[in-house]
Image (cartoon, rainbow, N blue to C red; front, side, top):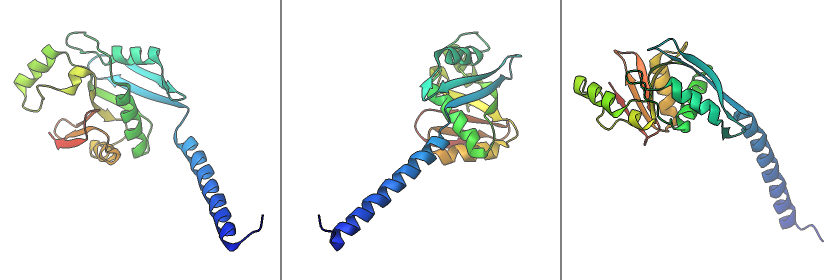
Length: 182
């Protein structure tokens, strides 16, 4: 095989692309931890939970069941499956602010009855809220101003982001990307 200028350039390009791919693979491995841990404190009862909910890219069913229990409708006691992507959203939003994912929960799952009651009392509660599907949560992040949390979540461009200044909390959901202020 003779090394023409063209072959030399092609070989150099292939080597460069290979090196870039290897570096990107290593960077991606560092960026995605093997475990994802989250801490939640329910503000309506004395319950809190710190749990690894995902390991090696797999959701842990026992952990999800514990999170579901913590995030139950505190008015009725009803539990509902929560969208695991919601926990990834919380985790990633916290990491984007530079802190560990330690949240105070104002509202997790809401039964249809609870949602209807809240909707009647406030125009800020959607009649078809994603809380009723286990796809929404209202939170505060420990050590982070809610404006910064909302801004970080917006930067992810992942789901719904509502910032409620007067009540001082952020709504996050796994619906389509949109934003609002309450």
